[in-house]
Image (tube, rainbow, N blue to C red; front, side, top):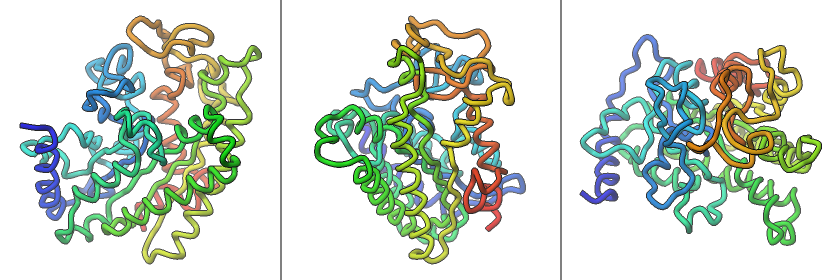
Length: 354
């Protein structure tokens, strides 16, 4: 059967299944829907035949159950998996893995995230390297349909983790830098995201977790470009600008959309704490990647030819861009029960109780 036929078949079955969702005692929400980039991709890119942005090979997944490379850009479970654990759900399966005959596995949610994705469509869409956020939201809208699922969706959790690739794209494009200022660019990012959140809200969703962009200038990929191995502060400043714009956007949405509740996670400050005070969290290495080759193991990504550290629990970064499982777990613990300085205006536990 053609893949598109399988996908369209899954839409109808998903629409029927979601209506009958029942919440078990252990579950805090009936379902979780995940949108974003490689930080929360659980294998969608495995199903994009033309994409080079994949992690379905060693040494990725070395600490995942079964030591299996699943397409997660991590040594083990990523943030999407850990959030699912916290709310009492199995990890939401990658949308592109769902043939119609197996759509029953998706009754507790779906993961639409795609490595390399951005808020803007960018060149990735034309080259079919990833599913940009617009496409992810389109798949979601078709999946849930209009069959009276709003009651269940209003209790479900929407997770959005995206923005880093847009900022990397701006920093690497002289054309973009000439046509727009950094502030104009991040404002447009926030405005575009606002429109997409409204589309998700229109399906009946009411509970949103939005993660801000991390200090991406401190990733091994950026440190390796500096002889001093210091962070790229220009990229970090853009992360701060975008995070401010996205927080303002969420406050606007709260006043515009009846019944919307959200938790904004300050990924920037939370990850910076791990980098600046590593011993407080059990880390010894904050600059170099665990898996890779070259300076700070960041010149060559985590390919099968790369080497990897023996103790993944003392590294903040798994590869040139992504955190280790242990770092992801610390961040999720913070967003789940954190102080308003880190999870604003309420943390995830409080959001789920609304």
